[in-house]
Image (cartoon, rainbow, N blue to C red):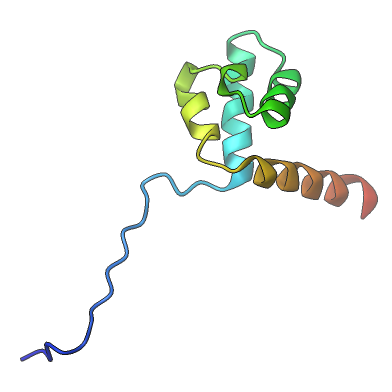
Length: 87
């Protein structure tokens, strides 16, 4: 028989635990498919926080809103540094 005094922990993992890089990749693809300039649109979103810069095609808008804007900037800078500065 289990002890009833101890607290059991139950963690529900979200169904959409994507990495920031994966989110950017998926949003970039959706923007490209719709004929937008993904770089300009993503920068507009990051700078303003206005989600209407991102298309709702393939759920891109709701997907990018799950990530904090500072995390987007951090990921972009990290990849840039890894690709250009460290080489």
